[in-house]
Image 1 (cartoon, each protein chain N blue to C red):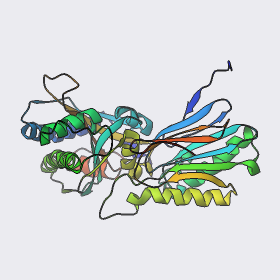
Image 2 (image 1 turned 120 degrees about the vertical axis):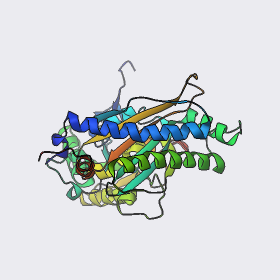
Image 3 (image 1 turned 45 degrees about the vertical axis):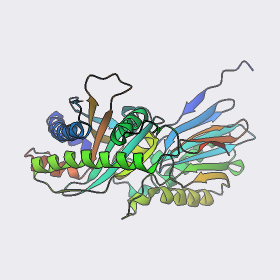
Image 4 (image 1 turned 180 degrees about the vertical axis):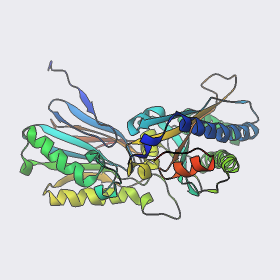
Length: 213
Length: 165
């Protein structure tokens, strides 16, 4: 049975709300961290093929700083926070206060990488703890791992679990960006939450939505 | 040369074939493995972007044959034979199978890159197809492009530049 066949628009709305709450808290954390106003877009929940996920991330060859973590506990899944490389550079510059940082070309210094990892840690931590409060489910995130590489190479890693069951994924995608700045200077990134197939039932059940078999 | 050259693109868990003078590419290989099979004499080549080592891991039917090492390679050989390639002339070049993220508690699913490479090699051995070149493992994503005219496999990585196999 393909689990995706049982997902209807009501379920997608529930997932959208999850993205809303999680990313909302994460955006607040980012705002405090950078001491800047952060805008958040209405989350977008889609059932899409693997190839389309790559497009969502800006094309599989697009170079990004990707922070990846696994979620374990009552619900398992993968989570990504992806920043285009220029913006990752801007962020590291801002956080460390060193204008010579450039993440577009290796070698990358230890300090900017560590700063980005910490960014991932804070954002994903606030995303998941708000989600956990909301659903009353225990979620244990792994220590985030950081990679600066092609988006396709990074995202495909989070799809492995899912790919055993399906050729499609339910992606909860939220974009956050800095308010009132031109694109080249702002920090704007994407959250991707990819729950494992079995976890959808747990999430829906925790929120009192039925899934018909 | 007036003939228009095109590059055929292969997506994730997908396969395709080309004839000269066209070339074939797939981008963003992480833990996935890209396998090129080619028959130089007849100028045909096929590329498959493999995600998982074995179709027994699949929990659904029908199975997407291009996703798994075992089913994908058998299917690609058949496809190439239909284009005129001879099975005993086929050679392979492989790339990918990286370990994108380092985790302390590495579970089996996190070691998927090396497992994919092992499965591809085993399957190629069973099919009696020799591996002429490989660039596997490491922790970089790769984009690969193969030209059946000169049988060169171009590999681009973010951190280590471009190389040709």
